Image (cartoon, rainbow, N blue to C red; front, top):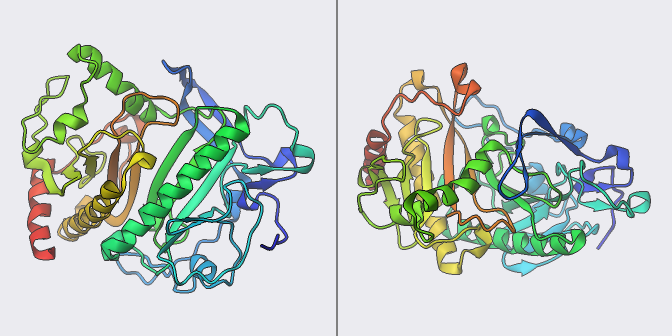
Length: 400
């Protein structure tokens, strides 16, 4: 391994405490929740993020592509150094390693590396090494999981390669969690796992990849996470049943489901795709037109706990769900302002919280919104999700 000259902040490595990323909570939108964690609007300041390269081919097509010699391609070809955490299902460097290297990686399907422009401090050394309190600093591990072959969207990737991407992600996350727990002597970690597909979805490089942010300090959660973590307990109280899980009810094939607040969730009408382990439906109350929601049929709270069969079937579900969304967007009116760009968000219990949450995955296309919809957790949709699902189901018949 070669220790390349590291600029301050690259790969989350800092010498100067004044340069470290920090976080601030909005005092008017922050509470302490039932898990004794701060929850509210969080702004994280990370100056190094402003130095990220934006590598797109803007050829005015529907989808903006990354060039075939983008930075990720150069890492795969051994032209740029990286801190490599995993290759397929093999562990490489520790998540807190400072060892970067150049290596030709074309024999593998997928790799996990440390984000060069990670928004948190990952390694503290020299005069920063002995800091005893980092409460207002953002510390943890930022990972990038990428396919060795160049693709821009999940829809075009062979299912077998998506499976390898998910497997290397699971391995890298497990090892990172273990190391952060030991370093910071904590059982609680915040974990964010997501795909940004396309420039409008926030991708600085369109070469297909996902990311994981794992925070080791008390960064807490935003209001969205508060809902996902708090709702399971609320449902159990309403149902007077400690074993009740709404997602488990939804996952029972074609069963009519009335949610705890009295809504008929119309599962059969919203179903787009399913296989042995996963159910894909249009969101009952979508954040954007065409939003898809994916449930594991077996109760699992975190991505790292998915077994190999669930990983295999998730790869298939992700590919077909994205194809269905592609087809739907292509057929919509320009007045709907739907782009092919999208975010894929893995909603899961945070490490050490044990909220009883059932993991779900949201696929949310980019759509222009404003006004009241920004003021509140509120959306004015133009199509019923039952109608969207019918269009998507029909489109998949032609795809398979």
